[in-house]
Length: 361
Ligand SMILES: *Cc1c(COP(=O)(O)O)cnc(C)c1O
Image (cartoon, rainbow, N blue to C red; front, side, top):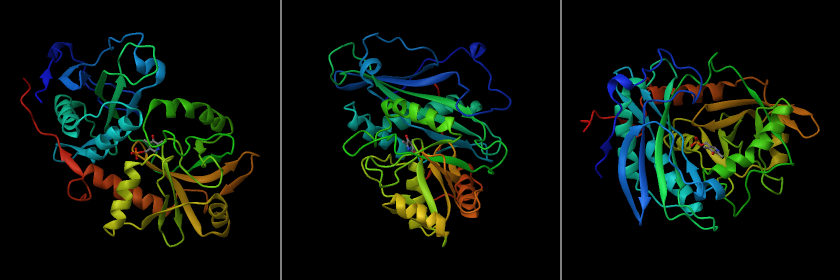
């Protein structure tokens, strides 16, 4: 499909900051947008980043028909920009669309839109170590109707946010997670496998509860409080004393992290030791106490690896994993993964997609 360019006059464009700081704060000049109407995707275009015209009755505003993704691109030392495992995100967006009764959007259209947008905004891709161009694709129902039903029209959009290194002072901090029986993220038969806004609005109150106890996040259990599920914006992992990463078996209340999937693919290639298991809370805690579990943490695109040093319970008591700091296996995996993303370590075939230089007409 031919993409229309409606670019800002060069004199009206903001210049990229000399150094990007923080995560998700900065915006570039343009975004990609395409609309779904009468069963078809129409008018894919790159336009100035601006407010949306939106009907007050749009389904997404009332009944939460909205989904999103998060991916990253990196500038390598050869000056070219590479997108990390993008197809995984494009396919997962369609899974989220399926769960929320939204239109499917061809992966090729998502990819074409992204690569052309990244090409237009190439000067905005940061170069400092561990910084990235964060990519935020999203889709929402636009039909003006107050009856509860799936929208017949949608908008898909990609915005970009140049982001600084997630770990500003280096990869040295291990956080505390709250293990609570009070809140649950998702249930079997629910929407837990979709990256949909509703799952996130539902996570804000539990997160505030966790912060009030000095914890970084909730480690969600399944609805029966027997099994470890995930951390709300990250999948969970623990490391056994032989160095094997264990990720809870995916089920229909755990979101399939593309980072977890990449780690499992690296394991299949013999580059790390990792596998999935159903993780029983009781066994998990007794293995931490006995020292069989030596490290733990979370996997997700934003932080890649986020080490956990402690868990807190509803009564305020805590349990420490290993020495409570960042363990060597978590660090080694972080360094391997980041190295592949930024091009200092070879990545498996097909994991990086180069952004071409297109003619902008
Ligand atoms: C996005 C997300 C993750 C992490 O997935 P990645 O693809 O690794 O970024 C984990 N859990 C939930 C609930 C998420 O929404």
